[in-house]
Amino acid sequence: MIRSFDDKSSEDWQDRVQQVADAIRRRVLDHTLRHNGGYLSQACSAAEVLATLYLRVMNLGPSQGPLVPPPFPGVPGSDNPASFTGASYNGPKSPELDRFIFSPVHYALVLYSVLIEVGRLAENALEHFNQDGSTVELIGAEHSPGHEVTAGSLGQAISQAGGIALARRLRGDTGRVWVFMSDGEFQEGQTWEAFQALSHYRLGNLGVYVDKNGQQCDGAMNDVMTIDPLGDRLRAFGAEVHEVDGHDPAALAAPANRPADADRPLVVIARTDPCRGIELLRQRAPKLHYVRFKDQQEFQQMQRLL
Ligand SMILES: Cc1ncc(C[n+]2csc(CCOP(=O)(O)OP(=O)(O)O)c2C)c(N)n1
Image (cartoon, rainbow, N blue to C red; front, side, top):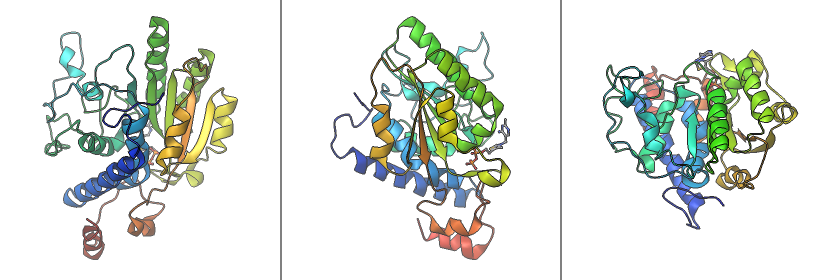
């Protein structure tokens, strides 16, 4: 059964996903214009994926975090249990509830925007974004809203998620583990070692959504280092793979509806467009990783979209 936090049995959940996705793009564009730059194309590509996860796929309890994020509590340690504040926004860690592991943490602003739209963060939660002493980091970490682990060195979170999924299965938890990844992470060796382990331990309680937007920080994925055929490679590593339109909520949600005794990791490859919803961005392709609008005319064109 598929369940969600704020919209459990609603028939118009796809409209709600679209509404949230549009609001995410608008908020990230506005933020990018006001802060002289941002990870905007990641909002364009991943908005429906993250909205579908929060509204339809993941079975999370109510947020346990304050609506306005607390200041940075200090580095993790046995004397500082308050340092892991990020995951509290995804609800309690109960045996029957799901866990969410957010991997490409430069997408943090996109995640904060989802949390605002689904009521887990306040409208003014981004006030201290990227400031010293704030948990609302540009590059999220374990104290940042929605983030359970530190994953700024890309490609590491999938291994951590595998460990969590294995521990949950050994404990008899019925809740699942969901992971959000970017396509650039599949250029890294650790990712493949992790998938080898996920299959070896038959971790059918883990599902991965990949934002396959075809870009990374040095340009187009296929120019830097191709990962295709990604689906076939992952199948060869023992995963159950679905390749879907990453802007179609129904197509994104369907593969998550699998039997409780599934024994292969699930991967949903979301084919996405890094310019979705902001056509003006296309003139910058393939240099879309981080955008800054220095040109006044372009700045004003973007402002008119708000
Ligand atoms: C292990 C590691 N190598 C390099 C980086 C630097 N880096 C930050 S974002 C990024 C791009 C990764 O590709 P992807 O997340 O697919 O890019 P996007 O779609 O956001 O452009 C890179 C290489 C990093 N954070 N970690």
